[in-house]
Length: 256
Image 1 (cartoon, rainbow, N blue to C red):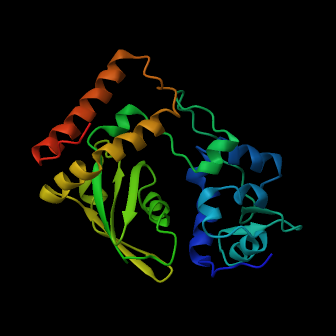
Image 2: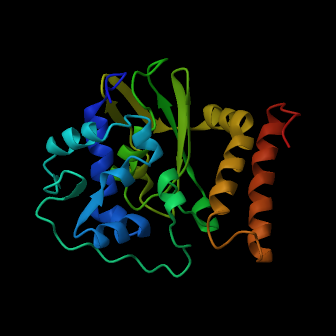
């Protein structure tokens, strides 16, 4: 099979490195189990099922080339699986007690589990970049997670040179969390910085509905959904009411 488009090998290598990173394997049950079942190696066929990989390539040979260019990864003898350099022990899964077990479908969708408390005081960051990126802009999420591994990405959008990435704060040092960040994906360069004042209000007015829909979908994948607990229902309603007030204040009568 011949690739029909030029592949961003840097982005591909970084994404595969993330899948096999210590931090991801501690929470990704599906990949963790697969690596244990395959003597320390993650089958390339499983990597190819991930949507972020599909956006870059569907050719297993390109995956092997990307791995060969990494100083963190190695291939098995058959070049059908990817492992961490030196084949160290697979990290134990974190025991949260609340997170639903990952499934094959979860791994394919690259889903990140969130809970209601992650939505308290989220930090909205603006994204500025090229009008038409040549590479997959969703790599921004991966780069941001690498810089702040204990934060959760709640929402991301990008269109015609501008967008937003919203992350959980959870009382972390906001000075570090909100510092300007430059991310380079192939030939594309993006600047991520905190939204404030009018720009922040404009985001909630124009995209508040979309944000609510996305985070509610993510919540539906956790054990907190459907909202059996009355307190969780109240928090959800209060959050959406707050966003609606901002929208109405700015004259958006269509917000619902």
